[in-house]
Image (cartoon, rainbow, N blue to C red; front, side, top):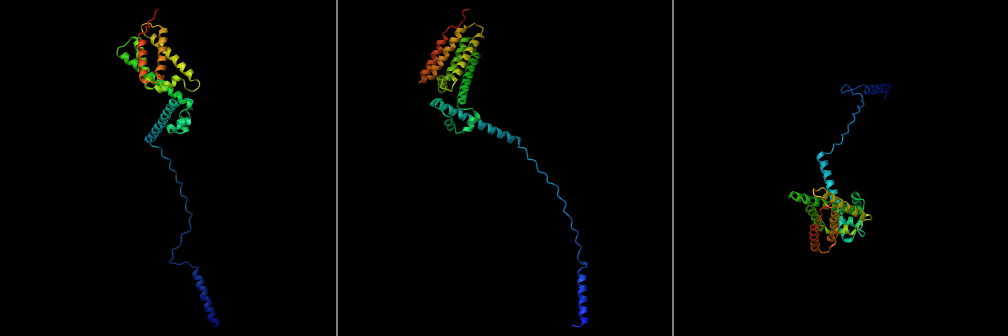
Length: 254
């Protein structure tokens, strides 16, 4: 290659390099780089409140389950106490018979003694309501004689003991936690006081000593009726006791 040809080739290369740095008229200019604006923080949705009806239904079901567990524990305790005795009964046996857990027992009761005392209080409350209902019914029939009203209540009380002889016998035997004998004596004392007040509220004066004797006779009748092995004989005895009480003169001698 001659010197002239070499110089012309070098010039062409320089022109091509210069042209490559010029903007292309057919190409749109690129937009300058822009930083993306930060998006606004997304607000967290507040947790929706439970539907009032659903919440109430859930609470109702929970209360029903708790009541069913409590009733099952009392039923199991009653069966074991009346068959094996309080001293021989164990918490694990009661829980197993109830199909419950030890934790559920201690949720409802403080222990074996509390189960026993709860059975006693519910039994006593049932007898009290039965007695009051019988006295109210007698008054509605026009009965006003205090002794006849007492006999109506006493008959209802003995009927209650006969219908639940297993529990009545358990409590009469005194087979319970330490100190239960004191509870039983206190309850009997309260019963005697209420009978004295009952007779005192009537228009006709009643001998207080007679009221105490009537109460004592009823206590002995309850024990014999509850502990008797034959239910028919026990019912016959209850009727005999009421007949004897009906012939006692309770009028005051003052």
